[in-house]
Image 1: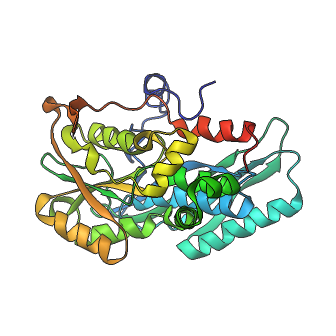
Image 2: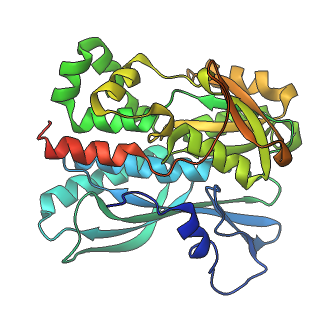
Length: 349
């Protein structure tokens, strides 16, 4: 069973190839490694949108599941450098999901939208045969801005620095800790467990993106932002470089891995560099603005680390470590999915 996204080859021959009717209004359509779509809406303004699955993970609970789901969609929109403003949601619910659980889930969606400043415009809600946990639908979120005020992960430039926020496998650490708290606490101990438990609030990267662009955008500062999600740090690096048609050199050992994540790695047998990274960002910046970007992020409590540089595509995309130099490739799959289901089958709680 292949869980998570289809292979890049499959996506290239389907989703990225067949894109419906052509329109001059579409500035950015389905593009590998790009978090948002961009549509010209006239008068010098654009609509910036993203669509993501939303989940209800029983072991996580309806409240945390709803919050995490909205954070993920909002964080993608915010990689444009703009605040998300509107959302529509499609809930395809399992037949056995009770009205009480639905109420708790929706109230958490509402609370999270209030926190983010996002208005709910509508959607669809129903119970259907064949629907099951944990993916229970999808959400589309968007915002508008002037045409010269948005970023995408395809806008990085030759010579840019690459900045990584927080630490590797941030999302995997957050979800697995919340989903299996008794097992994780026993393995990590109380101190590290408490640190890992607090990761949930950090999976919201909206403020991190909006803070980074205060250093300037395009050739005056931040050139591209990419949300680190499925496939982890290495996938995000390949995606941003590929979207911008660039290569680069990455000091892989400089990518932070927290002690709590190291322990999660041992418990669940994960590779931190290829595991769900929701909560971290990959930021490309002009070299003369990098220190400013890092200082802004760190001043608001977000760890930011310079991990490498982008260069011409002809030079390739390479990682360097104490073991030497190697070509960075997109991970075939994220080990988080199998780790989660394996823990469920073992009866972990």
